[in-house]
Image (tube, rainbow, N blue to C red; front, side, top):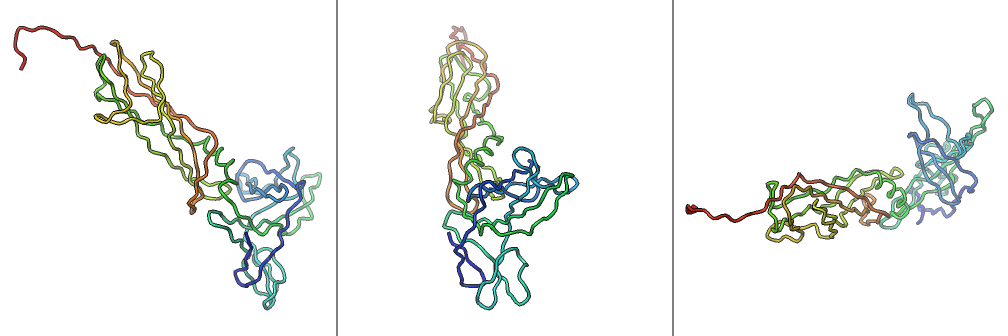
Length: 297
């Protein structure tokens, strides 16, 4: 990746990474963005904001008040003539300087993230803070791929509410016959969900992988990768051997993948999800032959 100045042709080659011991983990409530630094990687997470809108400083993993916070936000570079003089927050250039946007150029399939700034302060025993520093630029932006978001996508996939696969039974009127093929099938359509990961819009897709049919007569489940089809192209069916009332259930295993909005690349999600569908009770009749004296019309 390379960093570009939108208002000049100069290139910035330096990139400062915070040390791994400078970390902060904010509480779980949402709000502005702050971050946690781990070596050269900075993960942006939510800053704690209470219901009244007041902002609380992030805390360390052990619950103690943190003394440093990281935040992704747009950055600028200041110029005197054609030469860069400094870079930092938007609007921080001095009189006589002009300002250009500091941005990162990413390869196809990647997403550009804003630069990262760091702010530090001193925590007093009474809970107040002092000596709050200005925001210092520590990272000029990053390029993110689907692989970087995969762990977050996996957690989000586990929380999704996937609609169970519908069950269609033929004959369609709630009954069937002993020793006659009873046809079952479902709709194999993937399900898509729009969400955000680290503030980046993504699409998560749940794709049916296999189907576990239980026909409710004690014969044991049947697992297929085939969703079945209606008559006369049926491919999944069952033959009942006794009169009874049975309930057909369908368990569907779903595989997951996700795509960063605006890119063409799908990234697989580890693990699977499972849904269960239940059809209305099915009455199984036995057709018996009878002799009659009158002709049948």
